[in-house]
Every structure is written in structure tokens, then in C-alpha cells.
Picture 1: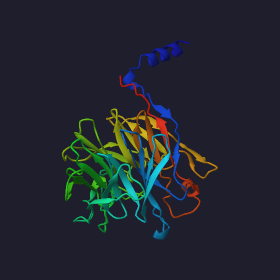
Picture 2: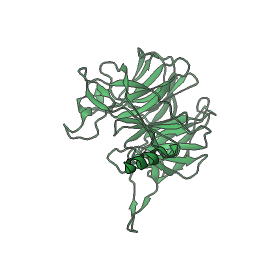
Picture 3: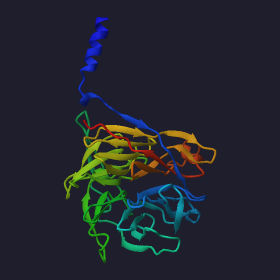
Picture 4: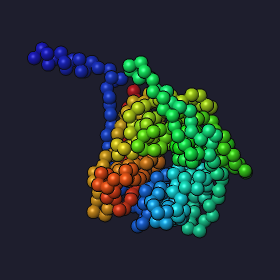
Length: 356
């Protein structure tokens, strides 16, 4: 009995800082993609009317099978419009000044379209991404526990991989290149003419040799924009880089498939696509919440819960999440993503964290 009392007193006496205080939650359906449209990837929300914008990453072979679309949904999940991008897959999507900015991965372009677009609205080319010199970032040196060192040398044929993007308050746009290990800046992206790309960082931490072949991915600023956070999807890392261009360092490890990234109310939300979860990190890199899990394939052929989520966007008090549901391997029968025949978006109420 004395031991039980002592343990009770010890537990009661633990400081709040020592408690993990993790929050868990589930998701619910927000909207299904139209029949024949697959792999929702980029996601954005109009902060004025709550409309949701989705770009698709359909990379099927042969290319003639692809049906890439930019979709527009009402705040309650009703499809309002879609615009075809055909064979060129899309990655990042952002809302700014009543326009939707689109990273056209297949065409290696930054494009934009009016926010209330229709099927026939014009798509404007803002700039084109090119091969860098050298095409690959520097080698990465890894110190091992036994005192030895590994050197990872990255290969690249100079194929641009524009993937994630984020605006700062001055209207400058920052873009990640997943294949060439770079972070770009487009000054005054909403008004520049012509627009030019500046490379603000190339770092071996932005590249990967993992089975998931995307390095630098989602981007987000902290509240005062003194830090730029960068996901490395293949390495499962969240990085941080002091602005305007300090060296990158690792904030968090083992966030498997760290894809889309956003900063909201003091916390970083990471789409962990290989864990089928949205993970919230505090600014010290601790996991504070995990929302969602894979719950199977529904009778309609769509994922239940989360399956390879690619990113989220805040809509009021909830977050909308895209279920990319993208199979990675060439083998058959080893991934649930192979069973998906209808793709969807889901949502969850953003948890309120105790910051004391």
C-alpha cells in the first residue's frame, strides 16, 4: 500500500511540462472527387468565402490516360467548377489576391488562374523552372556512432521538381524543388512582370535517396517569418532555416512521408503520408497531436479515414485534407492505394492545445 501511495504522489507531482498531453482525432468526409478524377494533391482555401481548391497529381502511364484537374468546391463541399490540365500533373496550390497559384509539375511552370475560375478561364504562365547548375545539391556527410562517416552523393539529370510553396506577407513566393534540392523565391509574385526566380538555398538536407523520391516538399513560415520550415518527404524530416537564408537544420525526425506543411496557431501541421496521419508539432519539434488513420476502403471505392494524405488547408475551425492515395511501388497487392477507385477530401476539427 505504501508503494501505491508513493507512486500516486509521484505521478501527481509531475510538472505539466513532463506530460505528453497528446491529442488524437478522426476525420470525416468533406467531398468526393468527380468520377474519373484521381490523386488530389495541392490544396488551398479562400479565406473570405471558404471555397476549397484542389489540384491533382495523376501520373499514370501512358500519359494519354491522365486527367489532371484543378477543382473548386464550395465551403460545404459542393463541386462548383473544374479546369482541365490534361496530361500535366499539379503539385502545390495557393490562394493569393483572388487568384489561385499553381505549380504545374508536369510543365515545370508556375501558373495562376482567377479564384472564381470556370472551365474556360484563362491560365496564365508566371514563370518556367529550369535545370540548375550543378543539377544536384552538394554531397551529404553523415557521422556514424562508430566514428566513421558516410558520404551520400546525389544524382540528377536536371529535371525541375516544383512541389510546395508559401507566400510571405510582402507577396514574395517561396517554392521547393524536390528533385534539385533547392528553395526558390519569386519576388512580388502577384505583380512581377516579367517574373524571375532566385535560388535562396541549396542544401543536401533538401535531397533524398529514399523509396519516396521527393526531397524538399511542404513549406511554411513561423508567425513572424523569421523561420522557414521545410519538409523532406523521403527522409521523413521537418527542417527549419533562419531567414533570409541561414543554414538549414533538423527540427523533427521520423515524420514518415512528411508532405504538405502549414503553420497554424503556433503549431506545425505535417501530412505524414506514409503514416496515414496529420501530425501537429510544436516549435521544438515535439508531436502534440495525431489526427486520422486508415480505416479501409469503402463500398464506393474511396478511402475511409486517411490514406497517403498529401496536405491540409485551414477553413475556419477545421482543416481540409487531401487523400492522395498514391501507390508507390511497381509490385501488385502490397499497397491499399491500389484498391482505391474513387478519391476524396476529408476534414477534422482543429484541436485546441493547452499551451500552459
